[in-house]
Image 1 (spheres, rainbow, N blue to C red):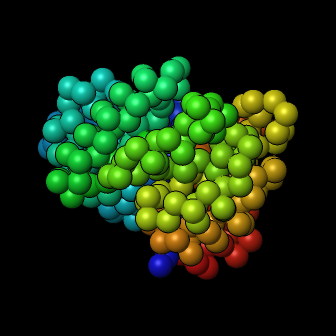
Image 2 (cartoon, one colour):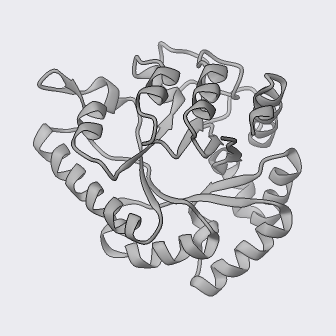
Length: 256
């Protein structure tokens, strides 16, 4: 099953804020075929979002998913679902959750599972985007990420291959073991595995990018989304371009 190759444009946030559609045109011209996120993508009412979709469609850019914080999920899920439908998105994703105690974590999982059930009834997936702490934190000898998967069935996982790696696991193995629970992965790379937050353009660091993408394709992951939290030696847009070219040079876009 082929995936759609996309971008979450945080690394070019300044460009996006200055000229959203002009920046998205550049992203499409590089070769990306979808985007994920919130902000200007979901700004305004449903009518405004429909206009956004129309302009993105003309560029050849789909929307894979939209991001939402905990408060929005608690108070504004129905409008988020509506906007996701207008944009043609496949999922809604929460990008952060704490692992402060087992009891609190389990309560959070109950909430996420309830959101996932509501999204499922609306024809959408609901994903949780992990970081490294879900891999490093253990409750009664079980990693928080494993507790999450064991205690939910509808909640999906948006796998960030860099945070899996920094958390001490192998992303390709994790993707294969949880086939069917992963509609999207974030393709991210790390320059230094000894210091948290040392990111680099995809294909220039220590993460198994090739193995991760091959595992994703093998397991039917529908969206492979480039992400870089901070620039290294390149500008944001050059990092976006380098990631695309490195993945293409590795022959991985032949899978898409």
